[in-house]
Amino acid sequence: MPRETTQEKSARLILNHAVEFDYLLPGEGQATVRGDHDTYTVMFDERGTYTCSCFTGRHQCSHISAVREFVRGTEKAVNRLLAEAIKIAKGD
Image (spheres, rainbow, N blue to C red):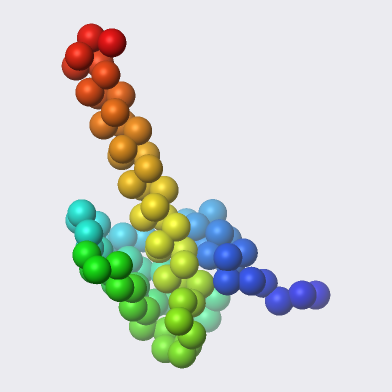
């Protein structure tokens, strides 16, 4: 059986609700990720720097990838809601 790619594993983590945010603010946040072998902390800042407590030595582990994709999806959803709210407020 082929090994899971980082993208496949990060998608699985998101779909299995393994990513929980401890806090999420504009430009920074911290999440707890329940991985296959342990629970890890992923933090990110306004510079786009992500760190993970898993110490894999890779530039981007699946835990960071899962948090990054979750944040991107959240930003897109918030932007859609804001655009809709502005449209409603203008009476469009």
